Image (cartoon, rainbow over all chains, first blue to last red; front, side, top):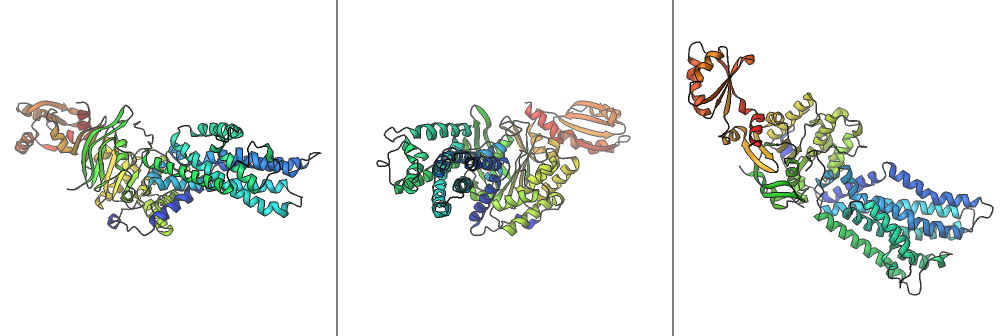
Length: 282
Length: 308
């Protein structure tokens, strides 16, 4: 062991932009954590399911039309089940995972404002979920339209690009909401699952003057999909497009709600204490 | 001396459980030991001092500044937490460098700082290995390295010797002493008294969230006027010596420690007793080879204080 030098005592000069550097390091650390372990592997396997199903349907005696597969897999299964589940796992765990692993101390002890810590981890969670969703949505689209003239005649890259934007926007809404769950609820995963099933899954399909629907991410995703991509079987969605908000309104609503929840989470993070379990038990 | 850490009437409640109870404390620069049994409130105190917890009542200041939600102050603070938790998949070097980067150091500076900190705790040889394969002692050292990596002015070490072997413990004690000698302020918590005793004579005793005593171990001893001072005299002819001192007014008890060739004397007036010793030693036939106060062992002081 070496003896610490006396020069170490003097204040290390704080260089300009140190906080940006620290936040960048936190962002990279969070991405590394998100891509480490079994979680991304399990989610990738889940996300492969639509593409595998699409491939399997190519070989059945009477394969369904690509548009039908697209509506079932790309416009329903992925955005209504896989995407929110991914957002829940990453966003709710942005802080809670560190609390459970008892490693949050290493973050709280750094000269980073708590609100910035929360914001950075949530943005990293959003990026992870958005990349996963976009990547596998594009893969599924490619498999569905494989060997059809539409693949390079509109599906790729235009339709895939618009879908990517839509998915990323929906994930922003989900991540900001589930990030808040992670701060508020002790069992955030259960609360989040209940939310996905009851609010996003069931209530978004009831058209009570569209009031309840408008409280869901699903609703805005569907309206934007209808306005920009016109899925072939969209009549199955219980919404009245003539009474629905414009694309700009949907876009602004999703963005505003995402920012609002992000801010709420940041404020909450600033006030909250996180007790680490110690042998003392206090 | 200007205090580095100040607690003013600080209480911390966890629901109905009291973590700290109206604690007022001024800790000066240098190495200070924080002693108390499990559940005394040591970790609560350290978490309050590092801004992880917010006081329910009162004020906590470090380097003259409030700690809670004061991110800039954390640049000057380092902490080795008690919990044995890491990002296990990282190597020791990666972990410490990441902590340095989170403090705002650039890539190169962080790498250099991590190497320095790991060298300080004697982990250079193992820093390329994954943390999940580390022994308990290596993990403790790595935790200490992350606390040192940004060269803070004030260090908080929560049970830093837990799980270390005697050699590692000795080396860590040397490192902490050196940090104190280099001008850092270090607050070390432990429930093992001899560890702290080996580090510093400046101690704080906590029990059930309350401050029991603080100061130099001898000053603390002086506070305990109801507690007899125990002095050990190592002497060849200890039985003759016992016969002599037992007649002194200020001696309350004498115990022969035949196995050690010594005499244990209990007195409430240690100054008077020590004052007579030179004359006693000059008498023919009495050769006192060693004199030490048994109460300088923190264990005795601690046991007495917490049982009051």
